[in-house]
Structures are given as C-alpha cells and as structure tokens.
Length: 89
Image (tube, rainbow, N blue to C red; front, side, top):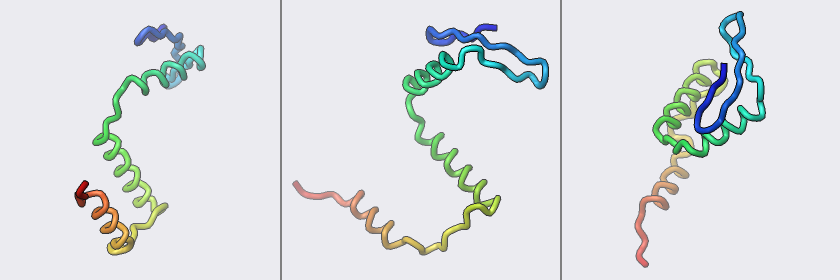
C-alpha cells in the first residue's frame, strides 16, 4: 500500500497481527511528518486541552501533586500586572 499526501509517497506494509503498519522508508516518513507540522498552523486551544488533560492524568496517577492554592500567587499577580498594564509612550 502506498500513502500519498502533499507530494510525498511512502510505502507502508500492513501486518497481519493487530493491523499494525510497517513503514518501509522511515527517512521519507519523518520528512513528511516534519513538513506537515510546518504547514499546519498551531491550534492554541487544542494544545491547551492536551496540556490540561496530561496534567490531570499525571495528578490522577499521583505523579504530580496539586500545588497549594495560594502558592506562587504573588509572582502570578506580578506577571499579570506586567502583561496587562498599559504603559505610556
């Protein structure tokens, strides 16, 4: 089977066990993936949802503990002021 997209063609072979795919030319595949990432614009909301889901997964596995509610509040307020306060020019 040949996969073609945006001018690239990669030969892939289907395995009988579990329907896994074997990529015949990994260099071509990596180049195709890299080029696709460069063409596709970043989706901030999608990336944020992924980050939040990974964070919640880490917390549910108790790999990361939830920080205390007020920890780092002063630095967050300072950062918010710097980012949101308009300066006169």
